[in-house]
Length: 230
Image (cartoon, rainbow, N blue to C red):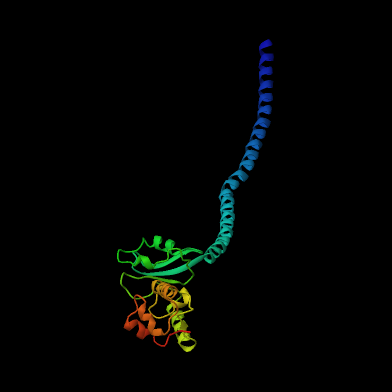
């Protein structure tokens, strides 16, 4: 009898175990489904994250572009503070140079590597300020041409024509810059004219320029009709 009761109890607990197992399996299945649903959005997030990064890069790109928009303004401002000068003659590197405003002839020659051995260094004013579109010509020793010519050739032609069409240059009152407007007269010759009249008094006639060093018959012939005395 006891054996039969024991068997009945085992059968009873077996069905009870089966009954408990089924709900557990259902709960486990539900948990698996819920976990899958939770993981699905995370995978989407991983796919979209590069897009978010792309968006950030795009924003950075926009910021960079915005920064680039300011740079041209800075460059324009920098250009306004620059001058362009054409250097020619007896220099090591004749070329067109861009320098800061208020630069001097000395600064320009340093950029060009200096002058050659044939340069007439006595006629160069290293302290002279440069201006935009200036043409600086360094003459060679014994060369009869201006050391420094201000402005472009077209501008010089206009000035020359204007000088011929209007008043002549008075060699007794003209300053250094005015004298350099004369054909073939550079800074050195202009200074020689001023030195001569300071030492010997005023010129009595244009031909008296022949008494100044560097002015021969050919020079006087070129200046005929361009100079005057008071």
